[in-house]
Length: 287
Image (cartoon, rainbow, N blue to C red; front, side, top):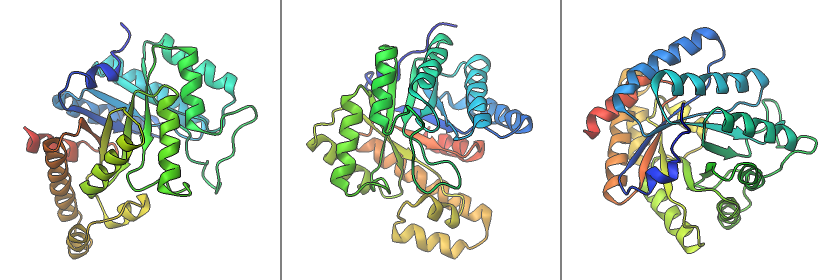
């Protein structure tokens, strides 16, 4: 297979870029279920898909497996995630070489969350502490990598202040990142305020909004994103009626995306939790 097209080239075309995020399943049955989901989502023809990266060894192996499957079986441009968690610099360099050798040219470079049970991030021996260090390592190893990094419209939970959070993002972009994908949010004004603050801080990289259709009120609270009053009231009224909650979530996400694109967002990235139905419903609403 030829090397993937850099996502930065897609963003430079000036049309909305559509992407979908998968997470690696825990077992072979989950991989097969994901394969079926990917087959259904092929009808949407996303510009690229991403695959998350876990803190444990087996999950990381699944990331590589799923990334290969999505690329080879479905022809997707795939952006694997890579984190600093549990890796030395040498290990990260080796992983970068394998990713590059397999033809992947796009990586989402993240510090990563602490492993389950840990309350704070600790770098591995001779490892990296921050995502900007990972960006620098990857670009030094393979300059043709196109790297995405994370942005937080409502501030990273560990950041001391919004200003400190924005300074961290500036370091990631200055180290060589080509674009920013945001954490999920439900209030578009939070996104546009974030974009304005990025521009004022000299961050010129495109900022792709990350959108997740709500599946439950508990799910939203777990992710920590603030809820607009109207959405909160509708979800609370729906209670445990799962089909109604899903319908509300899709309707809200669709309205978000339409407004984002109308106001000039460079595209959107869907967090679908490996579920095809919500993404397909959104695609029907966007055609």
